Image (tube, rainbow, N blue to C red; front, side):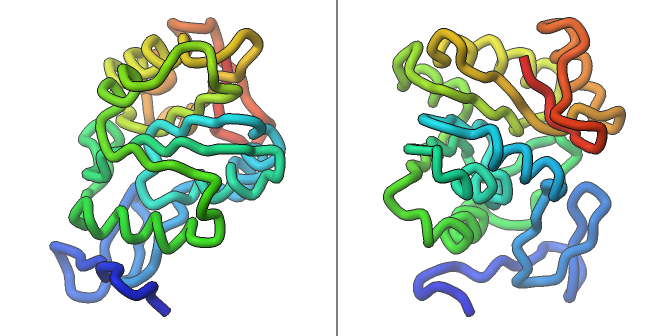
Length: 196
């Protein structure tokens, strides 16, 4: 049942379904866009103040907020998709934001949304205050590299820099992470999460 005042998403193509990352979704469905293993890793490792760069419909935000150790989640996203992640943006930014609100309604008070670009948001937040930064925004090499560089100073000493989609179908993510931290890291054998 939709939350009053939300916008029902409508696909620009096809009448009954749409595709993102090769997956088929039906109208009204909120896509997960994160594997259960990755979601479990986020829940287990998120704590304190977390910044998520690239929230979109909120699947990973929901996993982060499932951790009772998370005091505050800052979601950064312009909600318009990006070319670098091969995502077919089929919804308006308003519709994507409405999906995020519907998904996170039970966590009101524990998250803040910054509807802007990664670079703009990083300029607005102070350095050395976050416990974790999770990057899952534009998957192009240039964007991932820039996100790592601009968000690393936001972590306090010992904070965790990590992100999503460290796999061959996203070569920009793999290349940027490898350049920044050698071979990157994984949460487990089935995970696509990287960490520095």
